[in-house]
Length: 196
Image 1: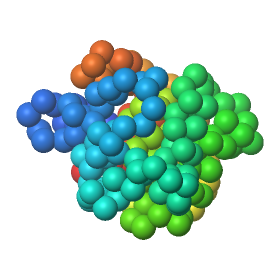
Image 2 (image 1 turned 180 degrees about the vertical axis):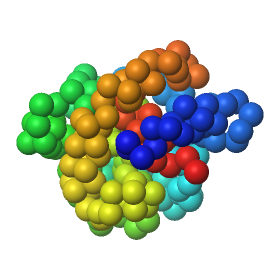
Image 3 (image 1 turned 120 degrees about the horizontal axis):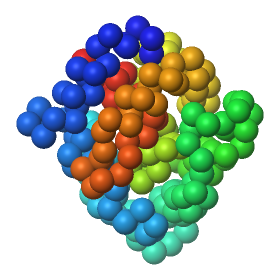
């Protein structure tokens, strides 16, 4: 993150601008944070470059106990478990962080047997409603840290945020989401990594 410090303010201003065409003014509106997962929540992840269609969304909400329904249950469980989780950057060590995100890791595991669902998809669906604890995991983040596994990515991101927490926290405090919430340090980190 240190390599981005000099351009961070410009990147954040660009990404949060209502006229630049980034997803901030749409994706970063949390909806109903305490409600169970809805089809609209899943489709909102498309605003972050996913291409989910009816084939990937409808099965989650059908009756039954197949892989898609099990994934939806795991996503709902993660939303409940992570609702009051403290912010990602406040964990004292990686072991405590990994214990806190067990439900998120389980949803990632459940995505394996559902076509077109991956850890990337799960992160983009859950992050919108739990931006303080669920990191966005995608190819840009993987490339930035040179890692491919979600747990390795979380570790690299956590360590990087720890090393840069002072200026990241200060910068995050300068912006609010379109629905008036504090911008999380975790969301800021993703914006800085992702924005060209």
